[in-house]
Length: 411
Image (tube, rainbow, N blue to C red; front, side, top):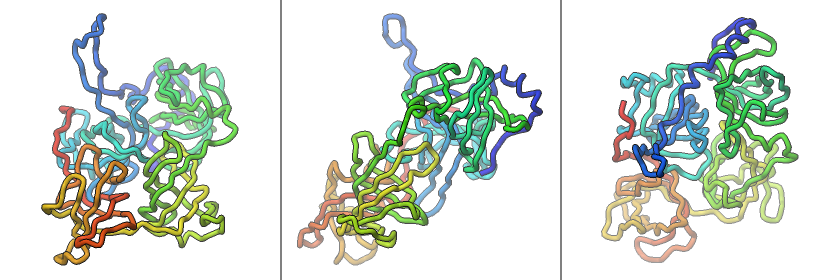
């Protein structure tokens, strides 16, 4: 994706730092208003949202979805999120006029995406888009480390969020610049220190100096990074559900309570792959359904976490693909699966659904229903009945899900 900014002369940048750029006006929906006695005067339910660019767009037989990368409109909102698009998703410009999603993608326009608060505990999080508003203002962003600070600003060395290319830039905050730390606490520019990692939004105007210079209106900062000696490693123990070029998807149990139940990890020649006894293996053993334990270091979006070590089990979870079919034996906790989505019933099964069953690709408030195509990984233990009955461990929903609600934001 090309970087988006306009060029200024070096002399102009000093005057510009005294003025907030237009994107600074883009904030979260209004919060609840309370009287002095604490009672609600005009309560407004806040809808979470992300401001950024579409960094991935899918429109195929599996449905339509976008990945938005940028920053949360509130400190608790997502920096990156994958959103399903349905017929109920409202897509408009800043004036409330309808806009085609393909037009936004083709023109690489910045957006504010609002979504249901019911999102998955995955990396990135997944949810359902309620409203998408096209921004009138462009901007750029950098992920990096503060290497130098002076009275006017700070030097960041890192990579462009939307271009993946190395970048070094002087950024000048102004009195209205928002600075948020990793805990959602508001900071002052004087709190910034060399060694801190940041995601800083700047532009669209950039001075042609060396290094380039620009004003910044929003900074996400990790204050702990200046003192961190080593990165904190995370882990997941589960089932490999997808393998593509250089990456794997895993669904399972996180190694710590704050971990993710579903992650996508990059694998390469530096990834250590071994069996349970520590014997080295190649990536050829990483097949869908294989039970594995992976260790990785969480990273700032949109970078992909790298799998440092993978321990491969001898066991695999059986995989079936089919369609949920209406049956007198189908309930909320028991699903009849037409395996192969064909006319034969010889290989059909019934899946028991429990609180431990992980469902990918379905909004948390939606339910699996007849007609939904799925890929399921289940227990090795099955009854000898016809159809056989077993317990589902992971269910990956294949089609687009139509969401039966209207956008709460009127344009």
